[in-house]
Length: 225
Image: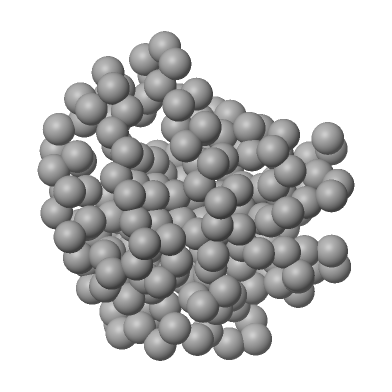
């Protein structure tokens, strides 16, 4: 399947991305990478390939411009990252052939927080409106969220507003993030599940662990998109 190089217009900021859409496609999953990563993340690209083979389109894109990424404050600015994810959702809605596809979010590390924040309808000031506008995606249009080793606790004020079924995937040996995900799960009111991958650390580099993440994400999106 061909991977198309695209440019996502996020309210005037041009962000490069990679779009893959199988034919037929049953949905579109938009990826939000974590800190110190990009659309080239080998882990996210692997998961995207598994989703593509399952009939799901995927969009991986840079959440920040090169100049923005040089400022470490932006890397951890969850409302900003969520705003970019929402803008990418809107970009996909306006693109021919994608507008009618149900959409899910896959977030890793800080991208997990961005996915939850965006799905909760949060704005820059942390107040959720659940709506968006013609230039962005609508929180109500997000059908499913998957977080891999996500710092979803950083989306604290938005956790209770998420309505999309949400899967939290954390490595068994990623003790701090696992604790934070357990606490965050208690604040979710949507359909949700916490999956702990045996023997995995934060980056899921142990044999078979990333494959397990991809399987869990594939099954979750298949069920809810």
